[in-house]
Image 1 (spheres, helix red, strand yellow):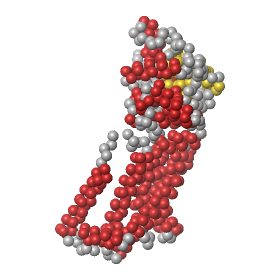
Image 2 (spheres, chains in turn red, cyan):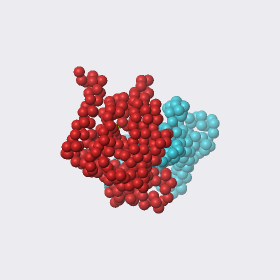
Image 3 (cartoon, chains in turn red, orange):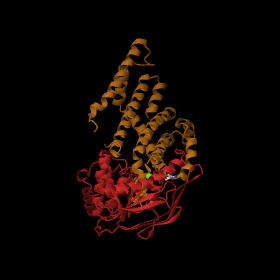
Image 4 (tube, chains in turn green, red):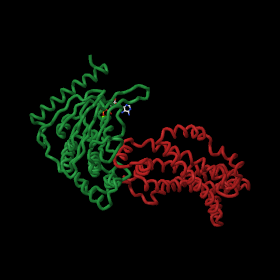
Length: 271
Length: 256
Ligand SMILES: Nc1ncnc2c1ncn2[C@@H]1O[C@H](COP(=O)(O)OP(=O)(O)O)[C@@H](O)[C@H]1O
Ligand SMILES: [Mg+2]
């Protein structure tokens, strides 16, 4: 179990209440991306969402962000219905989505400026968060001068700097090499502990979900439903060679294998 | 990192090209011995160039042409950029405007010259109109393409990080993200505008580089024609290089 968080910023709960999402595809057909999902993420909790690709993980996360509305059901943040994107729910994207026309400092400052934080306070917050991700010396660098790992650290600093209630992360480390990934997982946990907020973290990596999360949500193949919910009661830092870790891994893979078999048989690849 | 070549380094390819052209030109003159009123040798044109510079006439004509292009170019930018931003973001606006654009766009600005003369006579407004037609479409299309090419997650990031209104989103995300493409469009449209003004001045003008050329033809002064052409080429290249430089300075694409 993770320690109780520094409560200066308590984080906000997320309630997913009977949410389905049906996309109208171009040809006139329909794609059901999520089906009747009920999920309660507690304030300050770190929840990982894993599932086969195409099962609707991003769709669910984007509905939490407010980019698109559920077809049925509703999503609440801190008990209030989500009506659109808001700075209280910040986000880290897989492809970084940094603003290339701004430097590192400008990117981290962007949200603070829009929040109306006065300049001197802004500078202080940017400096603190750049330090948290170890990029103090890179404040004036151009985004295109950074490596993938550094870009994602800037994106993490940008997301935490606005002191949101919730951070939504869509496979943020998916494009990074294994070592960078491992390092950033540790950094993320450290920052999250320092600045308590709720995290919903989408990944297709089972070990990553176990390293990071308090609780793991396994989704079924499309249309994504909740398959299982697994509490991770291992102490941090989590040792991927420990028995507890291995047991969890086995359980999650067993669930996922069932779903993958469905996906592939649906596609006619298995007998 | 870009290597700093210095002014001379940048000019070198142009000097080479100019030398090449002059050598070929001289060869043609030496070998075929055309009449001076058809193709004068380089030195005679250089002399004509000097005379037109010394009398100040070249500057007057070049200034007039430039003023026409710059004002029409600026005017078209004021309309094409906002319209392009709107078309790039709104399917409805695009559906309304795009068919009209697609119908008008293939009509060369030169084809508008007769109408422009009928409507505006041979005053300034007719020429501004022609250049406007020539510069409007490239700027518009580049702006639309720039907006449509914006990575969708950049828009999402803008919304998540506090751009509450469409206006804020335009100002803080859409415009800067599309700026490199817009500036490229402006550069290209300056080129088409520069070509269009010369054509318009050839047909109906009392001043400008196009007029200088047309006048040279009437008084059988091929050297004056060539001086005009050289001035057009040099100014075109200079402005394009200047705009490219400004573009690199202004946008993030050239920054690394
Ligand atoms: N905007 C959209 N329009 C139509 N279909 C979509 C759209 N976004 C996603 N989908 C479809 O919904 C399903 C779930 O996609 P997604 O949420 O991206 O899955 P995941 O993130 O789990 O890989 C996929 O089949 C995808 O093709
Ligand atoms: Mg996804």
